[in-house]
Length: 324
Ligand SMILES: Cc1cc2nc3c(=O)[nH]c(=O)nc-3n(C[C@H](O)[C@H](O)[C@H](O)COP(=O)(O)O)c2cc1C
Image 1 (cartoon, rainbow, N blue to C red):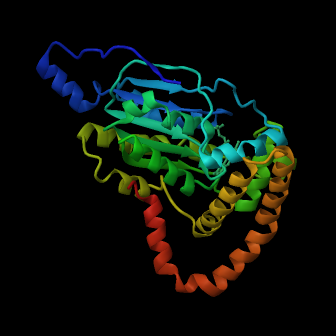
Image 2: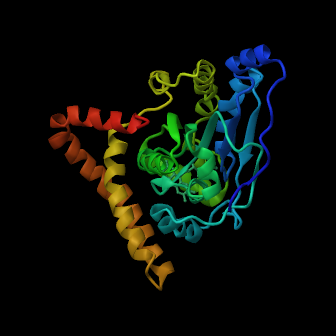
C-alpha cells in the first residue's frame, strides 16, 4: 500500500540558529521504520535510537503492519508456508501508514531475515512505490535482528535499495551468537511455542541475547555522529570495528549453499497444487540438511578446502560487510 504523505514542514525563522541546530542534528528529518512480529526488533530499534533521543533529535518512528497479520506464535504449517514468498520476494499487502514528511535526511530501516531473505513485510515495504519515492537519494542505515544468517537477505535488500536509488551508508547486525544448531532448536521452540525462555531449562534463551539488544545504542551513536558531521564515509568501518557487523565463515559457507537450494524449493513449491504436502517435504529436507548434511559437509570443507581458501574467504566476507 502506498504510504499517505502529509505536507513538508517548514524550518526555523532564525537562519543562524537553524544552521546550528541542523549541524547538531536536531533539525534533521529522521525516519525509523521497521516490522517486528515478536517485539525483538522493536527493542533493538529502541536501543539503537537512544542516542538520537538523548541528543534531542526528533525521530519519526513507524512500525509497519500487514493487512493480514502473521500471528505469533506460528504453527509449524504457517511457519514453513512463509518460505516460498519470502525467498521469491513476493510481497503481501501492508496496512496503509502515514509519514509526516516526503523527504528525510536519514532513514533507519529495521528488518529481520526470513528464509535467508528479507521478511515478507520488509519486501513489501521496499517494493512499495510510495516508499521507494521516499527512499530515493536518501542515506539509509539497515539494522538487522535475526537468528544468525543475514548475508543473503542483506544482498537482496542492497539490490532493492539500489533499485529505489537509496544510498546505503551503514549496516548493523544483531544476531543470536549461540552455536548454529543450538539456535535452530531454540528459535523453533520460541517461534512455535511463543516463549522466549530457556527450552527445558538447558538451552540458552532464544534470539538475540539481551546484552546484544541493549548495546545497540553504541552503533546508534556512531550513526548519529556521522549524521551530525554529514559524512558517512567511515561509518561502516566504524560499525565493523565496534563489533556491529561481522561474518562467521561457517555460517557464510552454509548460507551461500542454502540460498541456492531454497530458491529451487521455493520456485517448485509456488507452482504446486498440493503446496501443503510439498512444504512438509521441505520441512523434513531442511531438518536433515541442517542437522545431518551441513555438519558433515562443513567438516570436510574445513579440513580439505578451507586452508587453501582463506584469502578468498576474507575477500568474500568483506564483500558482504560492505555497503556497496
Ligand atoms: C519464518 C521465519 C524465518 C526465519 N528465517 C531466518 C533466517 O533465514 N535467518 C535468520 O537469521 N533469522 C531468521 N528468522 C528469525 C527472524 O529473523 C527474527 O529474528 C525473529 O523472527 C524475531 O524477529 P521479530 O520479532 O523482531 O520480528 C526467521 C524467523 C521466521 C519467523
